[in-house]
Amino acid sequence: MRVTCKYEYVNNSIEEFKEQLRKVGLRITPARLVILTLLQNHSKPLEVRSVLRLLKASAPDQATVYRALSSLTTCGLVKAITLKSGIVSYEIANLPHHHHLICERCGYVEDVETCCESPRPRVASFTIVNDHRLEFSGICNNCA
Ligand SMILES: [Zn+2]
Ligand SMILES: [Zn+2]
Ligand SMILES: [Zn+2]
Image 1 (tube, protein in one colour):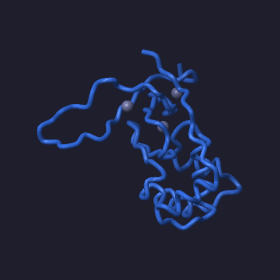
Image 2: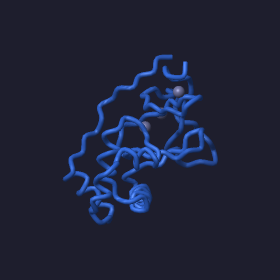
Image 3: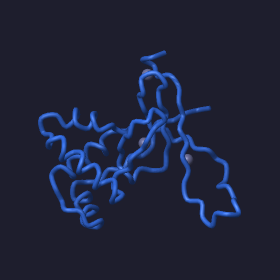
């Protein structure tokens, strides 16, 4: 199976982020903008501790980061992903459809385009099937 890691990343400007915040009824705050930008600039989901580390000195305090992630997730601008490891990671919501490949040893995660090609299941008790989850796991270069 070929796993590819490249797709056209979305590239929202600060103005577009502001517009998105307005649309979902969230106040425009520096913390929300800085988190959206950070998540957009990373090609993989980030745990809260990585968000805090990457924001470094410019970081709003920890409680603000947690609150911002939570409101952004609730409003659908950010996606919370629970990987097999049980750790919740965050990524920008409007990425193209993709899945995650996670290292079984260290938890390192990459986005991958590979998808299951089978059609949506038809189940008598379901009117609509919207979405699916698919998670790959393996051993990263560092751990191999
Ligand atoms: Zn690894
Ligand atoms: Zn992803
Ligand atoms: Zn898929």
